[in-house]
Length: 471
Image (spheres, rainbow, N blue to C red):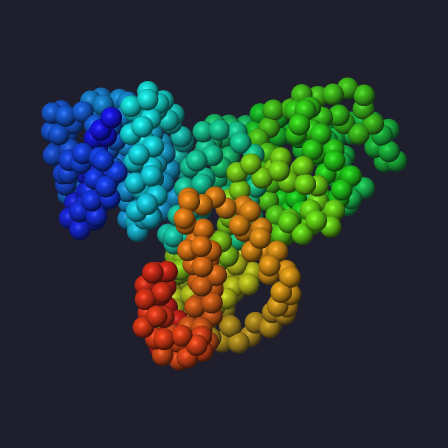
């Protein structure tokens, strides 16, 4: 059966590329570049899917979707947008979009989504329910766009989520976003850092205890599971949970019931579980320090939170956000010079967003000028204690690659290029950082041709100017 698509896009070059790709999949594509033209074509024709940009010549493609729903209530809509924020992703989800693609997008993924949407229409698929509003995260990098898309995909269900990422990347913020934007937002969000609880107390902390269960238990205590009833329980640093607690946690997740320490009655629980870890669980499973069956129970939907060094272009807006937060917290108000922003952008930030936040607060406190300039940033960077970060052993690097592959889902034929890009990004950034953005010297350091370097930088969307040491 022939598929029919309406493409609403005011960029002629993008529209041409998408049209050609859809026609290769036997779509009949009608194109228009405005809301008024869209409404006219929807009134004259029936479509299996609509792909629409957000910022059109005569209005907002998302805000006007109510009019589309009146005419075509069952037609799936795919949103395309250069407004690459979580706000746009959530607005798309809130308005029942079948899928959301930030620009630049993967054309193969877009075509695949259009085929799925059209087939759902032809097969009588259901429209997606609404999702609520919220803006808990900052960043427009492609890495963060992938995070936003994963967040919007888990808002309408209670699937268990495992957030993976280095310390300081904002794993709890992602967990809070899933809770605040999801159907459980009016119920409690309870966070517990399993690494911060003494191992002899962790079961009582999670499951509660009865009076007299152990020395010092002078009254009944309600644990984190019961405190989160109806809402979300966030288990941070799950990789540090002792084995005996892992066993009991697994039993609770499987049965949907808990028993307080020292108690005889079981309590039914209704909570969404979101776990997080900065550790590589794969070798821990091999050496027996983390239960494999618990890993698979938690790793239903993995979300990989990228380190700040892989979030190209996100440092300046984050820095400005923290300057505003610092001013709201009573520190002097400041702006940030372009040179200062560039210097911040090329730092490794091994402590990630948390380290950047602390640095900006320190700059806001110590800077005597209204604008924080490059000189101030250089001085503060020079005053930082040198971070002692040991290089991982080769076998650890191999385990990290194995874990990344195991936790990722690739379309047929995409694995090699995805893995290559994942490895090349930090490699090229390191070379540019070491050479101050000089592409010739970076190519020599890498041992590749300069033209090859330029092409790969374009493909990976890495701007050498961000690594320039010029003011």
